[in-house]
Length: 470
Image: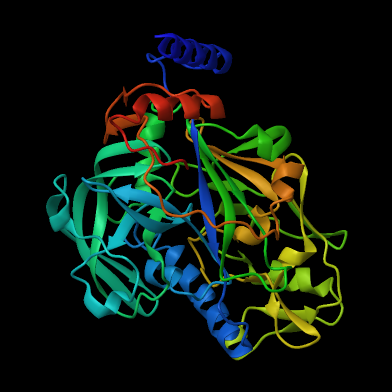
């Protein structure tokens, strides 16, 4: 009896200590964090690097060309193949019972898709989704095909229960891919989670994040991203901790000062904002009339207009324009420290010289991260990828539609280049569940955000819910 009373008292004290200012069961959950993992290149062979560079350039032509929206935001299969210097990915769970899959987190596209168990050898060795093993699968019998520079992915649109970071959306529309034109060979990644807006969706489905943000499932209708850096670390493993995505809140432990927000340009499609100035080696680069930038976690480097890219490398003595597969890229002396600053209408945001290096071309020459965009008329001026985003805490806000940047904290910076335990795919306890397009969420016991509350939730739920810590 005494033990029972003591446990009750302890639970009460834990709840009282951690719930101050926390949401009640009638309000939305504050938010959740999910670890991101980073897949690094398995080889530094420069022949392969050159091919990867060419593939990246070709992907952006299709991903951001002035084609119809039905074909924009594409190039997915090339994105998932190992052409990039790295990809950042996280875990979702799909189906009933839920099964975990790793997906690239891409703010430059809007579709969720997974390779199917019917895809066969063409989908490589990554885990595949089997609709026959889920009781909540619903085939919408709508075919889709996503074109890119040298091939396509094809399949059909379905609905399923999808979980991510403790949030669940029932009847989430997504693409089930059963045909690829070339091997899908980047194990363990099984697909892409598009984090841009529904207007870009090739499957014509509302993205997972947008359903949660618009339906009131989050305390704050936004998500934040912090990415780690390993490019300047010798001996980095192929799979390393990659940072975190914060859904429904901003993680104050990862940034300092205030978040500087910039409204999106026009109707929300991509996360596109104005770029005011770009400075390299203290010299202002002329970007007049070509000053909008898409913030894209699914792109490794930074693409821009030919004239501006030429001006950037003109500030670096010894730079040379690439030819062949490296057309549009430049090499420069690895011994040069390159200082770059972006300004989007407020503060200057510096980019590490380590991130200016895409890869090493020889013992003395490096390949630069800035390259010429071949998107042409109707496309964006700049694509700002991970080379910049590793230097800031980025926030993607639903309303008003905007992108925010904040300075990284010492806690965040300390994660760069430090080998740690790579988080395993897990299925977390669902704290918020909603239907696609629903105006409000169903809260299955709001969970305060502190660690004591997570421990308490584990104790209370252990009899009926399998809880795995994210």
